[in-house]
Structure formats: C-alpha cells, structure tokens
Image 1: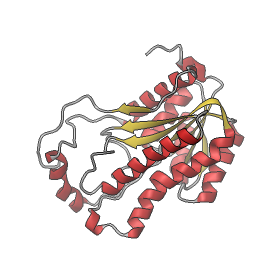
Image 2: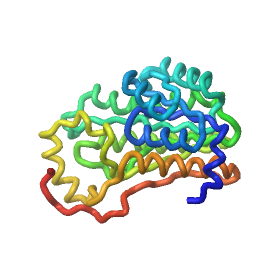
Image 3: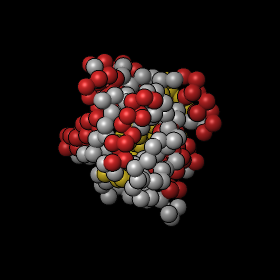
Length: 258
C-alpha cells in the first residue's frame, strides 16, 4: 500500500474504544505508528495502562455498559488528544451459550457491550468530530450466518450494522463505516467460553462451513483496518460504507477441536 495517504495521520487525533487488547490494540498501535495522537479506552485498568504505555497512547478507563462512562470516556479522550478525526469502536464480547440456555442477563451483557455502548459512544463524540471524520465499528463475518452458541453475538452485530446505517442517514456529513472481521485468533473473545459447550458446538461450525483452515492475527487485522481508515481520512471526498477483512484460506473440513 502506498504511504502517500498514511503520512496524513500526523496531526490527526483518534479514539479506539476497546483498545487494550486484540484487534482494538492492533488498530491503536498502527494509528500511533502512523503519527496520530491516540486515546484508547477499556474497562480493565491495568491491562489498559500497560497497552497505552507500550504504544504511546493515552489511557482512558471506562465501561461502555455505563452511560455516564461513555460520556466521560469521550470527554477525557478529547481533553487529552483534541477533537477527533478517527473513532473506532472495537469493544465486543459474547457468551458461548445455546439459545435454550441464554437468560436475560446473558442477552443484556452482549447487547449492552456490542450495541448500546457503541451508540452511546457515537452520541458522545458527535460534538467533538473534526470535519471529514471517520467513525468505524468493528463487526463480524457472522452477520447473516449465526453460529450455534454464538447467536446472541451475531444478532448484536446485525443490530450494530443497522445502527451504523441509521447514524449515516441521520448525520450524512459524517462517515460511518462498518468494519467486518473474519476469523481472528489471539484475541480475548473466547477467553471465558465454556469448554464443554465449545466441544458440543464445534462440529456444527465445521459442518456449516463456518471455520476457515487459516486464521488472521489481531495485529495484522488491526494494522490493515488502521491503514484503510488512514487512506479514507486522506481522501475526504470519498465516502465509505462497509469494509470486510477475512482470511484468504479455504473453509476447514470437519474435525475434532484440538
């Protein structure tokens, strides 16, 4: 990729929500390397502080499931780095449960993090965006193809994408982009998955062609997303809608989990 657009991030300001680990950290790391002043936010204070120190970003602790925290995250980020050219909502979570075992708290946990928090952060940044800013939301290749045990996650991402379209309609002067991501290993996504449930649903994932033989690394995905946004920032006359990032490998065959 040419660096002509990437050099434009010097003097630009960014906020990455969910930037303490995984893809979010990869995005923030690359944005800082390209010269942007970056604030990263997450709820785990120690992990966030370590990540911010490692990449030279500003840490803003907060929980996107808390409405007041969403307002404070944005206020503190803007105070630290300035009005924003780039906002990426990379916070995301899921439980691994089949629908017949999901309770109301499970649904709230997923939707409050993946959907409601995204909208509250967006509402909070509206008055702090520089002209031609890009607001991106990390979504998933599972949209339209829910996996057994992860239906709540897929439903939240479908809703996230519809929310992004709604923001685009109601605020056409801002570029809202959906960033669809495929199979990435090395994130915290599956950290709390129940091993027995995973063993039970794995054959279904393979049988329905939901897994690829190869996977992507969080830093590679994050860097690619950051560079794509950097090019978009450098070309304000071009609107963006949805970008998809997935492994080029073939679909995996039916096998037992390692």
